[in-house]
Amino acid sequence: MSSTVARHGAEVTVRPGLEGLPELADLLAEHPSGALTLKVGRRGVVVPPELAVALREAVHALAHGEAVTLTPHEALLTTQEAADVLGVSRPTLVRLLESGALPYTKPGVHRRVRLEDVLDYAESHRSARAPLPQHG
Image 1 (cartoon, rainbow, N blue to C red):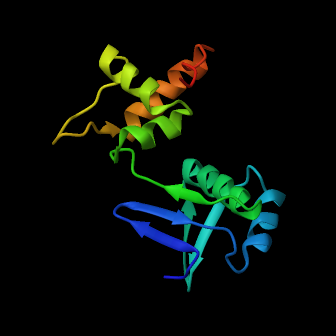
Image 2 (tube, rainbow, N blue to C red; image 1 turned 45 degrees about the vertical axis):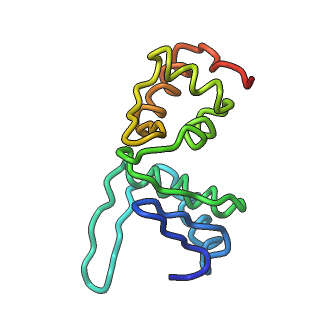
C-alpha cells in the first residue's frame, strides 16, 4: 500500500499525489457522461453508471488536491465524526440525537451513529431547503 492510501477498518482514504492522476482526470473529463469500461489484461467490464459517477467525482477531487475517503454506509461514526459530516458542533449533534431527529446506538458508554442515517438526515434537510442547525 502506498503512502497515499490509508486503510482504517472498512474505510479507505486516498490522498492526492497518485501517479497518473492528472491524466486520468483529463480522460474522465473529456467523456463526462460516457460509459466507462474497466479492462484488466484481456478481460473488460462496463462500469455501472452510479459507480462511474463516483469514480469521476473522486478522481476530480483528488486531482484538485483533496483527499477522498470511501466508507460503507453501514459504518458507525462517533458523535464528533457525525458532527463533522453534517458541519455542526458535537453538542448540536447530541441535541439532534436526544431529540430523536437522528437514531443512534450506545453499544457501551459512547453513542454511535450510522453514516447512512447521517447522510439521509443531511439529504432531507438539503431537499427541503431547511438549514442544518448552527454550530453552538
